[in-house]
View 1 (cartoon, one colour):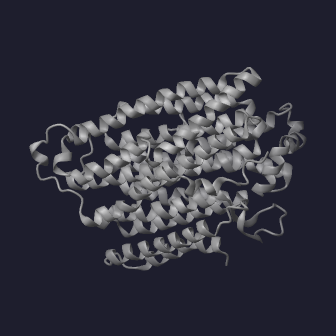
View 2 (cartoon, one colour):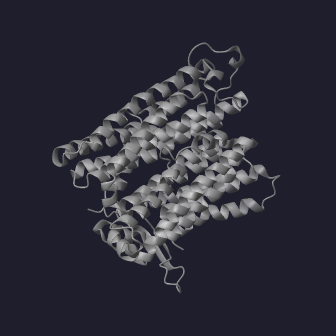
View 3 (tube, one colour):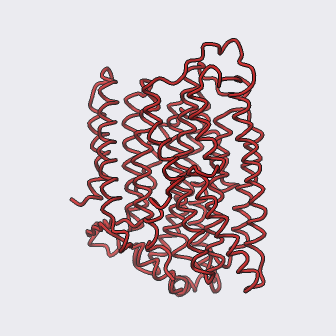
Length: 519
């Protein structure tokens, strides 16, 4: 058994063991789940340190025939590059963080579902055959559905159902697209498909296979691209495919929201980088202008929507969409200028990868603090419900303030580096495109996207002002501050916020020789 197989199935074994323990042993079940999550973290750290950064590319690979007799190209193919390794590490950090944040309120079902979700995430980030990848990608919907429903009440059930339907339909669109690709290429191997996409052979093979259907040159390729895009756009989500997200984040328990924003949204971005960009670089370049404006709309609309929210969790939900929009902006700019200066392209993509990891840390930390506040206030989380909490609970105010300023992009904290590199790279690519290609699409998109930075600062500072400053209401005069256990829960993530803000090279070194962005 390879290291990646062991990593993927370790939480699955933990879920099976937790499932057979009687409910009355709730403390033991939580300890069991946490123990298996720590084991996964140890393996993730081993992979991160053992990964040969000087070589790059796919490492720790494992390949077995899965369905040998039908000639479908379905294999059990595992491997990781720098992107995969980073997301495995993020998954291994955030999952036990969410479990600890939930505290004693975590039920047996929730522990089992968290472990199943972790296994599905590990499988998604290590699979290099589409069917293998798709099984884990869709498997994640089941535990996520039950975790969202665990919020209780009719609204939580509706939010869980809407989440499941949206993402399932998107996944089906993606599956149909890949079935068309398999008919044309006779493979589901993602690395082989990436090489076909980079050479342009994939588009030609699709035309040859389906040309008799009358779609015209490139028509079937556009439909296949659209199906994959739809499946991933729902997952990120991209506006206007985002409507499931605010309710899901708001109605789920805050520790579950930590998993949704910190990890599951990254599956969509991972798909853009692993599937769409390598397989359809020419199509993404041709459609770069509408894609760039979708990214701008995602950034600006979600920032304005966050500004209008009165519920802290819904505010943070829209904030999450806003921050991931910057990743989309850089990905689409990268695709729009394939012959741009290599250093500028590298800066934009490094910014995306840093933003993926750093947003996962920061957003999950913010929802963790919301969980602490809800626990002390009887479930209240409206901006108008508080005020002046800094004087009653200075530790909560200080540590949550660090996470908020990280989300705002304050220099010295981890949130700054990714956004800086994204704008540095995309501005340079936009200038290059305007000078050499007489197109200002990238530059205009970057300028309008900068509006989102201003609005983001406004709604995050408004959050600090409404919750922590001003006179303290009498009802919160004895508002408890963080306990020592809660401080220990958030301390590792707060430490990483500072470490990666000061020394981002810890992560950037993983990206230097990734296999995704072939010349």
